[in-house]
Image (cartoon, rainbow, N blue to C red; front, top):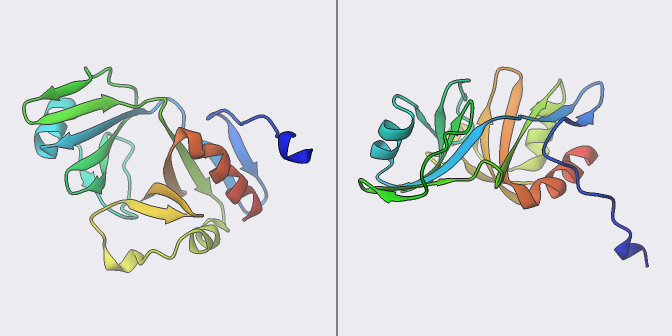
Length: 166
């Protein structure tokens, strides 16, 4: 009964893929807060000046938000905010620091893995950072070294398995 013989799930920390031309590692310590409603008010209250980014936009190291939908975004900060959960001043904030995981993919083969993982049109300029990558719903942002995928934590193992085979 091999279907019951599963390897232990990897924790969202450390290096997941370490090959000469492709690497994938967890980006640890980030704060992640789902915001909805009045996104301008949410960003002003929680991370003043944080830019709102769409598909494959360059993600700065400072606080920024990735659009999910017209009225939803994932706010990313260098450390957890500890924001109170709930509605206020026209927006809702929900800390999801352990509910989402962030993976940075780097190396000379990172663009190839990106092309294999999604058919998104990066030149089209979608306002939403949401994309299907390897069949999983992710938020995609570009970095200096490659790209970052933000995925709901329960899907991290599936994403790592896909990247391991890329």
